Length: 68
Image (tube, rainbow, N blue to C red; front, top):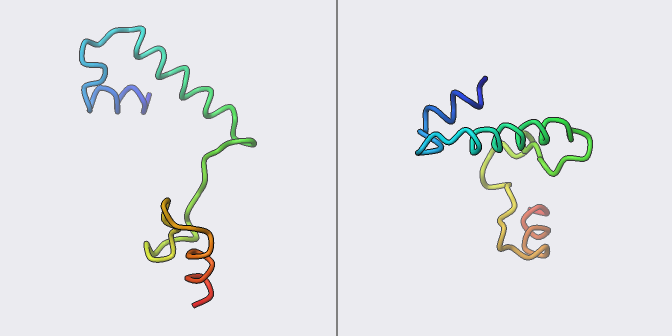
């Protein structure tokens, strides 16, 4: 239900094709089923943006910053 509301709010899909909505719903269901082996990460421990690792950083840069 929440997903359908979000789709409607952002007017997706533009032509409201049922197949597109069905595909998004199936993807959401699959994501919810795979909670144990998911690639979704919770960043609650990184509340301040400064401690979040940057995508383009080397591991050394991240390690050096963590030591400070």
